Length: 420
Ligand code: EPU
Image (tube, rainbow, N blue to C red):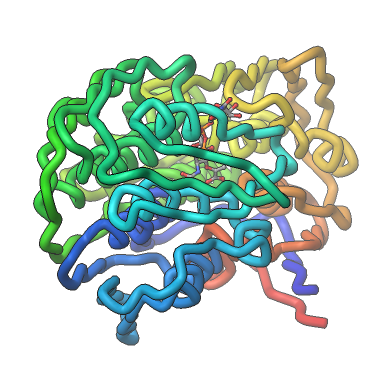
């Protein structure tokens, strides 16, 4: 299993380009199942999860043409199998996003039921309830969700009991080909949901209200297809900004979108960073100073993103002062704490809140990653620690960060991949 070895203590400095967003790319790839004609998706990030979604479409018999820059042309005319097998779903929960599109386009779908994962139980009850209210019959048997609909799905008004990104995406996709109007209330407002809506509109869907908590979809008979560029990854952007802030460095990130990161940039300013933004770039300069501790409470967008919580915890371990981090989206997402304490951090947990007492430094240690963002936070901890940190199980990182060690090397980090 690959590991990352980091010699800490270097201030990050330099410029980077940000990749396409994983969490927009995955639903957009699933959405290609809705189109009649070819769909070309560009700016896909080169990530393990993206490859898994492509593999999933491939195993259904969908025709895929991939070029060297990872633009993918998808044509679903050749689809022969309406099933998402356990072997793929168990490696990537986002596979559940094929359920709504397959049901809406082909009237049937069989998708392995995703289990819990390291960060929480992550049920999908709201996806299933929404599709049932649109007329689908759903049975769970032998670990599989078997869904079908007689004729077309029907537009309805759905009030989401809680804000769910995937649930909103699945129902929004299904509603594009339903008969009549669907209104999703208490919808997720995440930029990735908006990007998916824009892609669906480019395909021929009629959607309004995306980016607000009420999304209205008027079903159409068919979606002809489109060419679409995936939005920049706001979490990749935020991760490099925090890595630079924690190491007292200075960086500029290009091909990104500052508008989606307002609350993250606000917190970095509070930590003492000098931030400048342009239309598609962000620069951060710590002027060599130690970050100040910042309190965080995660919430659905436009609140503070749960996907950035672990990285801010890493910064707070070496910040000036004491910070409280409260995780409200997932029940078990403070999992990086114990590994950070092994590196000399001082963090105590009470319920869903972590108190982080900033230390003047951390010490390198062997640590183990348990999920994607926790892995990113351990890399940041390794970058600020004295001596060597070896991060194990970095297959988690490869699911969500394109070429992370090359990008960090470009910023002056001493990091290398060790393969067994
Ligand atoms: N939830 C339910 N029932 C449902 C759906 C969700 O109770 O039917 C709960 C979840 O258990 C969780 C909360 O609602 O407590 C929010 O979950 P949500 O559905 O919004 O999350 P998701 O769609 O499964 C996406 C991202 C996550 C990101 C969350 C929150 C993708 C592929 N994944 O997950 O990204 O943390 O939204 O913003 O878009 C990551 O990239 O590392 C990652 C985990």
